[in-house]
Length: 391
Ligand SMILES: Cc1ncc(COP(=O)(O)O)c(C=O)c1O
Image 1 (cartoon, rainbow, N blue to C red):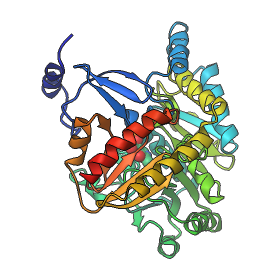
Image 2 (tube, helix red, strand yellow; image 1 turned 30 degrees about the vertical axis):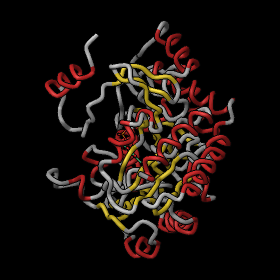
Image 3 (cartoon, protein in one colour; image 1 turned 30 degrees about the horizontal axis):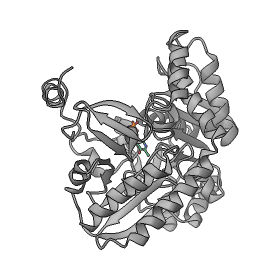
């Protein structure tokens, strides 16, 4: 078995440098623990960058579902259907709103599907999409057009018609809507932008404006769902229902699943030939996602996320570390705003055996531990974090 440094060296030789990779190669994971290729153990407060967010690494029930499905049927073309993808779609709809699902593999693809759907639903001449400062919707050329300018550099020109407005400014939205506007994309809680939660009036205002002007409201729940924020889906915090919802990351239980759910009003817009994805809805990934959904239901992980989130936020606030300006978020989607950019913090925490994430120009430390994390392990990880923040 090659050593960690050998794997890292080969990575630099054979893989593109498009990620700011740390010199770590991961070898094994179990729940909220992960081990690198040299056998060093870490507490993982950010498993799979959100993709292993429900149960952490290798939950036995998800693994079992994958093994059983792998021994049965891995994939087939989308001229056919399969039971796991239907059951997963049924579970998503049952916990959100009536509609129909399109499957792909990632958040970017799910948002791309939503973008095409919105334009098609709006009809000729209506193509403008409103999105918000500090949002993140993906890196495909379409979704990049909705995402802040710093991600677009060098790839211009973008899609025509994107309008980026301050997050939370309803009157700016009202002023920006014209006869060419087709829809609004919003994260119910911004993730990459630094865990920013809008107020209820803003989200309800967006819903009302979409109704008034016949626009589609798309909630990008790639980070926020399922269950992470203490609700099945984060839009449920605001007493609204979107027309379209996109999911990825944790909805696959650790395997790649992207979902675009369209409500009844627009569920039949994407007719044959209008969109597709060869491996979307493959039974293997759908089986993993379904196992994760069953786990959330049986273990009441929505309530657990809310309970753990309160505990984490209280512990961090009580610690009163001088460099912490604010602790915010919902459920176990936690953002710790720091007094200044602290790029070195990740390395310091890794040294101490804790994995987290830093975003928003190294100013916001993000925690997204698995919803199943044992409280003793959570306490141990928080202890490491607080000690490092105080130092
Ligand atoms: C809210 C949101 N939407 C879309 C994406 C893109 O997802 P992916 O990286 O799976 O394409 C991300 C990625 O972090 C995200 O946070």
